[in-house]
Image 1: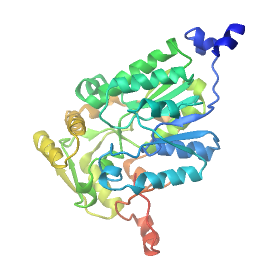
Image 2: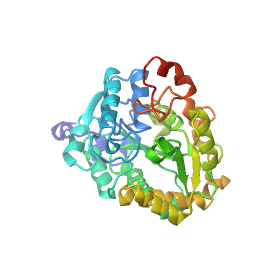
Image 3: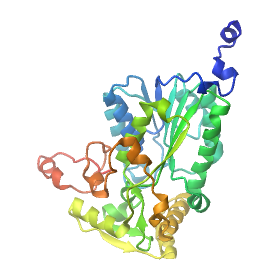
Image 4: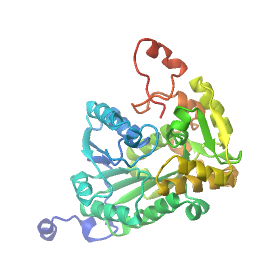
Length: 365
């Protein structure tokens, strides 16, 4: 034991893989890497409302995001509003930038558990590799990560998916060389996508532009994903070193999504179905970064292939974890309980009294 005292190391740091035998499922200080993200915010709020006292939340105030509700779209108050809400619940807010080593070092001080939701940004696998190495150095023990649905076709066709799968491969090897145990929550397309990536085309022009050729899409609710994350975090031992594929019950077409948006917001949303090349041209007009445009186009091409209509790509994991049926798209839009504070798209029926009273309704995200 004198050697361990002199080095400041635990047995799990000396003998790779020993963490499997000395597992401690206490959360300790938990770091949520993206408190402004659609799932990260929900998880952070749930942890705080559940009574967790040591919740550190990372926020980024740069211009990484593109679309409605981001700093790049001119909504500089968006992040500040979220920070105020989380701080009022007891969160420790820290500035966090994935691309800066010093930011990662500061955020990981004293952290035992990570809830990681990597933002959609222009980066390489080296960024995650460095972060994971720092987690090992700081003796992080639990690492819960969001990813995209583990499907080889998506992996080979969409750069965003390839990046996530490479990160997942690294994380799955972590228990062999450190105390880290992992849980990977691989989700299909989040229902938030229509409200974030469409930007002004949806919020101002009331147009929902896609290139999915009428094929069904596997859209899953961020509320359900956050609930699954909470189940995992509160029972880490039962879910350690596992990968779950979180999907909807059945596909839904973008034409149906446009109808639901129109119904919920009482605003006629025109569904504009473009061919692939016209969709690419449409993205270029949006003046979004080339890497984001490439990913968006690749996702639409995959949707148009009909891959999400294949019953083999749907799993029972989500329902098994949360103990109920997944939310429908309409249920998600009507569920204000866990939505992030920010801009509103349009008043929903339940918002009319709020608007009449001169107050601002919450954002539908």
